[in-house]
Image (cartoon, rainbow, N blue to C red; front, side, top):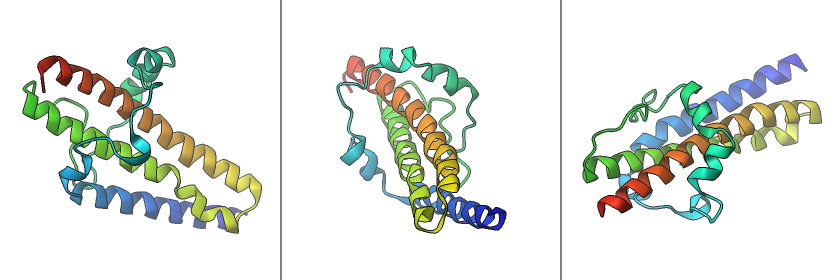
Length: 151
């Protein structure tokens, strides 16, 4: 089972690297608005994210947006409308990275016992969803600021 876990780790790590490497090379226009499963819903409210502690996670999670050639999201690019829009595109790009990465554990489901599937679900899915929710919270805040600025 240890050998299987190591193989799983290598597969999942390779998937995360590929997704992280490809995302910064995708055209910005792909991320200029919410698309597909990442559309904002009525449940996406800043106060809801604050209530479940997302700002606390945001302080403690590492920022890896620049690891594979993307942009770091640890600070704003600027405070003008154009800079905030560019930052919002990067936040959406990060959302897609973590959304797609969260489901990579499904690749190993057919080849593993349920215990390893549960372990990888906890690590990969839940871990990526925490990052995803932090980015989602930032997107909500950014879209609110841009709406107030008329952008």
